[in-house]
Amino acid sequence: MPDPQLPSQPAAGDGTADPVGPIAAALAGPGWCVAEAFLSPAETGALAAECQALWEEGGFRHARIGVGANLRLRPEIRSDRVHWIDPAAPAPALRPYLERIERLRLALNESLWLGLFEFEGFFAVYPPGSFYARHMDNFEGARHRLVTCVLYLNGDWAPGDGGELRLYTDGEDPTRRVDIEPRGGTLAAFLSERFPHEVLPARRDRLSLTGWLRLRD
Image (cartoon, rainbow, N blue to C red; front, side, top):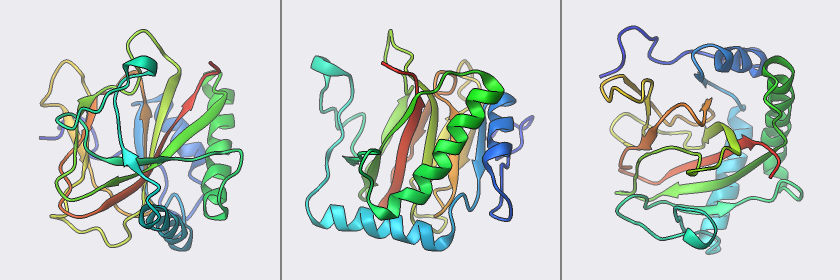
């Protein structure tokens, strides 16, 4: 059950104002937040259409875990499909999101002195039954990924569709957790080194744009 001492979802914007400042403030405080309407419905719909087109073209592959020579398919741990994006040559649908993420990067560097250098990310599709078991976003011995950002693209998500992001707000206590609904246009952001998390099984195709603000290699 959610931690009773925390708000179920620290808000960082509802689409009526620029959410970048509130997101930066939330990351400096509890370390995680949910920004509803991070993008407009039109912008979210364009990203969903781009994701769907890439899927239909066969542009996705089974996600792997690990790094470098240790990359492995482990479907018992992670069973989504991914398509990595190139921020240097983005599709038009990606530009509003990347522009806002760049402003978030600059705001976090100014307020928290994180030294964030770039964004890396991918479209993810979780077909029905797919999931990602509890994990951390930084590989063992590395700390390049500092801020995780997950933008949800399903505009018609409904309770019962599954695919919630379960964030463990105290890594030592599995009962202290929150489940974040993957509603289209919503951004979940959190400090990558601090919060274990998982994706609960999806009951329909679940689309997202997932990535990290990270340090220079």
